[in-house]
Length: 384
Ligand code: ATP
Ligand code: MG
Image (cartoon, rainbow, N blue to C red; front, side):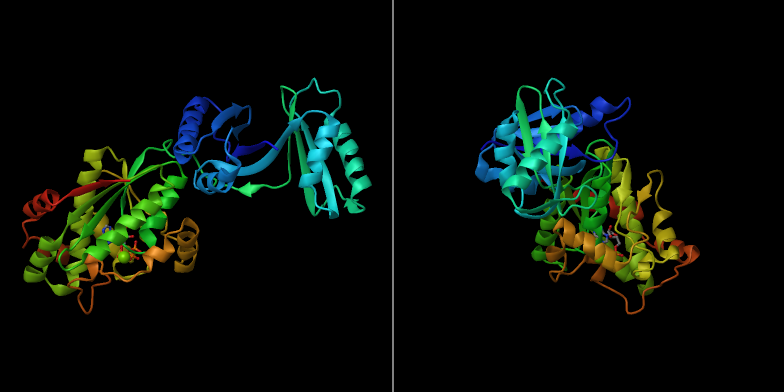
């Protein structure tokens, strides 16, 4: 029997003046997710339908659609003729044979001769007559059978709701540049901003040859994972080896991380402006490590000239971040062992409350502009 996938959207994003803008982004993202699978997407008032696909592709379609932000729920429905005999035959397939249930009907085609209440009553009665261990409970049923009378003489019958990714369609909330490491936090930060509709591009700093190629591969895999939610992403990689060496040679060791992070933020902001990103995104979480005290955050943030730095994880516990990492499918990659550039030349006692006057004195020993220029010359770009 022919099947249809019903897509219901999240939030109220299709309301108001921007409706067309949101719809276009949403449709484009669904089509992009289903690239390579033959199907047709139909817009209907209040929802979308995916039709004309091969039955064996259903699991793959659902797997892909679960990563499209803006989808609230989905259902795989049987399509049948809009008459009670055909609906009953189809409902028997969807309906369990025991337990409590109710029938929920919706009459999209007002020309159908019965009201939705009449459809539910009639269908419920017929199901009870064939499955004797069933009982009706309209308040707290074990399961429901849904019937949807469509225009054009067809009806959809289904029993399950599959949870979507929720959020807003990617492409409706501007563009951000994610500072991505090989750790757990930053991919989750990118995921969360994509969930709010943001296009996310990535920037990674490495210390090759102190960090190895596996470390880079790991970041590539994380960016690819994020790309499944963010409708693709660009990953730029920049070497900061020469910066770390300079700091190591000339500055107080306990300020290594603080000074390096200030370089990262400067490079990131300039890169963001070049690619048209409107903000930076980091995976910082307050107090998690030495550089993430409020003083540490202040000292790196103070080199930023214009763009906001979004820190979607700032108030989350590690466990909460790990849950999200598992959910997005990044955790297994993030926990692979690797060396972050921050761990190279790591001091024994990093300053947890760096003072701006100390930082500026140490930084004055460095050719900040020259080091930034050299970093940009090392930039590589990958597209996913
Ligand atoms: P993560 O789990 O994302 O690595 P973390 O808890 O290890 O974060 P830090 O190493 O202090 O914390 O980094 C804080 C944030 O700075 C990261 O979430 C990321 O946004 C950015 N960052 C750290 N290292 C790098 C890097 N090598 N390249 C790009 N961004 C980085
Ligand atoms: Mg890290």
